[in-house]
Amino acid sequence: MTAGGGARVLVVDDDPGLLELIEMRLTAVGYEVACAASGEEALARFRAERPRVVISDLRMDGMDGHALFVRLHAEAPTVPVIMLTAHGTIPDAVAATQRGVFGFLTKPFDGRELLAKVAEAMAQSPRVHASAGGDSAWRAGVLSSSLVMDELLRQARRAADSDDPVLISGPRGSGKETIARAIHAASARAAKPFTVIRCAELVGPAALAQAMKAAKSGIVVLDDVEELPLAEQARLLPLVQRSALFSAPLRGDAADLRIVSTTTQTLDQAIREGRFRADLFYALGRIALIAPALAERPEDIPVLVAHFVAQARGVEQGLSPDALAALQEAAWPGNVRQLRSVVEQALAQSVTAQVPATLVRRLIHEESEREMAALDEARRAFEYEYLVQLLETTGGNVTRAARVAQRNRTEFYKLLARHNIVPGSYKS
Image 1 (cartoon, helix red, strand yellow):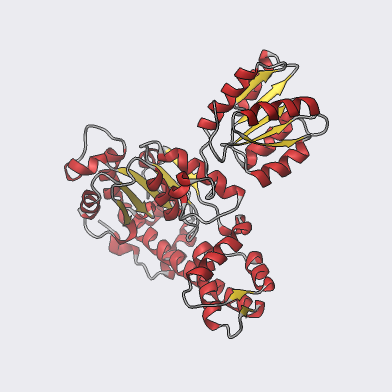
Image 2 (cartoon, one colour):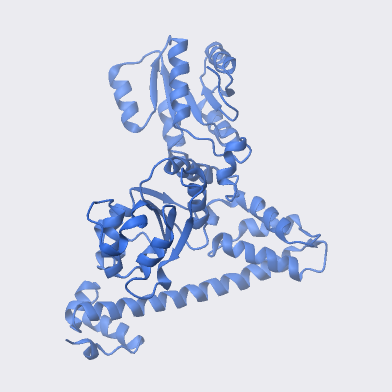
């Protein structure tokens, strides 16, 4: 048995002799091994080494294996953890596996059993590092060096091996479509079309069916799926469920599609308000991924900035250390999209070889104001559309509409007045 490149294992044990023995067994078959003598050291090594599998002693001074697993599982729940203990009992094993521990071995362990368990864990923990070899090309468009993005990429890589629908949620500009492209590139459908359908731009009852037919047997991304009208949601449901009762407009090639949806909402509120079908939500979310906001992964900002600078052809500039620090400290309501805009503007406007922090801070402020204005405008447009749909559904009955919206009549009338909506015009 030999391990491929990038097969990192973190081994944690406060017994130096056993730590050395496990390291020798693993390196002998080709694994890259990092060692830690305590739970606290293991956390630091885990963040630095990004292992694909962790082997930890259960009983250790200070942070024991149970506590270490809780911390690791909170940061990277898809990284398999194998527990070792000299005091193993059936209740210990059951409790550990119920919490999500991948495997449980009792010391003194059999070397072949350990290697078999590690190989099994490796099979469930795909490589995600851009430098992990030729098989990392699928994630080439995802620029990151953060633990939170490693976790998302592990989930995406595993999703690529399935044909189940995927629902990717996250704020605007966080890279949901980029993650969808990575899933496509890693899947068996990589050579087939990748089609993005902007749900907010669909016009006409047959628009969705026509767009999906054009996608043939590849992957289709339903961008902003929460914007689909209820009638289109009803047409989409049987296709997503892979039932034999496809509606006529979606027969043929479209029935073999893999569907990936993206949304900026959790959809819970839309379901409660009757704007999104609960059955469609559950069908679309067989695999659910969450794209983190840029503010949750500031360590990715230098990687992204370097990429944006390299893309600016003919530009022989860089950012000063203070300017880069200002970028890492910003809130980024517009996420990666906003970061790109600020960097491109800074390079275009700077008259020095190194972009100064003062220019970057001014651009961040201006961009953030634009983002907030755009958000307010989108919120007003959404509120208007929601009120109109609510009145159409209730036949202009303000009492019923206010009850559905969970507002009192006075507050609801104020909302209508704010948008110049006359409820009487919606009466049947």
